[in-house]
Length: 251
Image 1 (cartoon, one colour):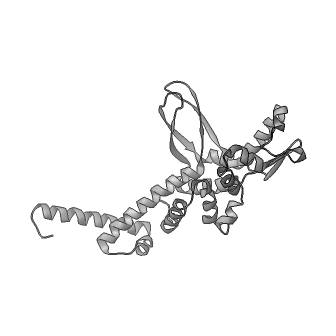
Image 2 (spheres, helix red, strand yellow):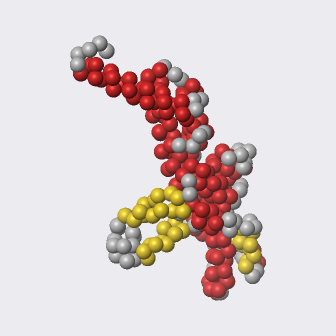
Image 3 (spheres, rainbow, N blue to C red):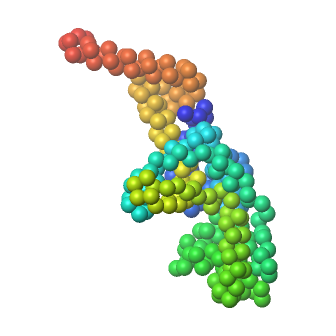
């Protein structure tokens, strides 16, 4: 459990109150990398994913245990995800705009993603916002179809600009020997980790509040060592009370 219990609860609340596509922007604000959510939504998705990755590394350490389902046979695969390796991929962010021949490719932002998701064709809408073909044609047009090599270069540039928002891992399924490609959604992984930690914090607050009558700020203000000792005392008190009740002693 990280030594920032109040910050954990604040981040948990903010993430829970925000739609999943915008949660990376929430992390930018929480880490002081944007003044508010509107400004964070204008930053590239790669920046949001990078901030989420750093937060995840601080909370989970160097390796995160994940589970992936094989799409071929359905077997659940335990996948240890080395966050240092993902960080190396995330450092490929580079500039926010790349040119591929005559085509300009811009890194998508959270605002781009939210707008695209509101469109009946999200993929085409996102390309329209972020890919500019010669002559003013956008990514929703078909000029790339006439030049597959150019289209492949544009796709590669978009992947580079995604940074940590576009990381994946490959492994082989021991059950059916299929090649499994799993996308790494660092924002979702962070959200799950923060949710686990926040619920553990709240459980400890409830235990100490019931045992000693303390408020949440008082519990969260305890050092880890003192909190652990008080939890142990509260546990022993419950055990002793239960023992006395079983013997018919005084409550």
